[in-house]
Image (cartoon, rainbow, N blue to C red; front, side):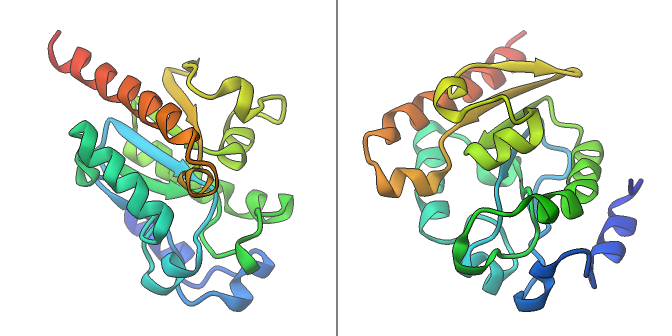
Length: 187
């Protein structure tokens, strides 16, 4: 585990822990408020993210941004990261050895940010954080609390591009997160 952002950034900058390093343009560590109450975790960078070095900047990220704006959630007040920090070829799901290789980086990010809520974007994030027994269709929209952190599993924004019917559920899940934050502020 890395105790400071500087240690984490130094360690990851030339990472070769798995085969994903072979084709990357940029390592995509994360972005946003490093003291955020709310953290979003996706599965891994896509082509746009690999090129720009920032998570959720492609089509799925733009869709997520629209939902955040519509709900009055400021992206720069969140911390956004992924399970893996390098792009899987063809945007495939990360393989087990790849997620294991990146897990200390992600654990350090969570430890350093100290979020109160983590939004798990899609099945890969859900299973890697809460466990293989969790299914996104059954868990989506239901709060899970573990070790003092509240988790909100929801659809990955890329799923909304494939199935527009999921947009309402995604919106409602993010609304739950927003309302939790408002409740905390107002108490």
